[in-house]
Image (tube, rainbow, N blue to C red; front, side, top):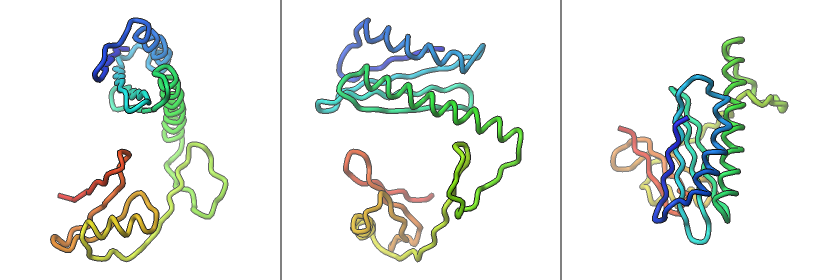
Length: 172
């Protein structure tokens, strides 16, 4: 596996680089004989240290980002999350090849790990500005809100970003 380590505003020491390579070497068993690329981004935000790990092989993309007090702890959490994603994906792929895709009913409370539960909700989309949509989203306590833009009559989405600010999705 080809590993690329990028650090923001600091240099990565040999101990941390070898630890990252050692931890990512365990993913070689998931890609035997195939070329996979791993990208590790390290950054410090306030007093927290953030690790973003992305592994790509062909059409498969596995990604995790974690913040913790040390890079080692954040890396361990990322590795655990990516292993879980790979196990889930492997189960889904083998099931997909074996069975046809089926969507479980919403009333079923027992859900197997590799099935998707799709809940359908309908509501009236009202024309408003993006600012009004943000106020409405905050009022109901959701992370996103779908609305019809007053000026363009397009269906748009506002969402709350991790950094605390807001985003707006406008269809082309």
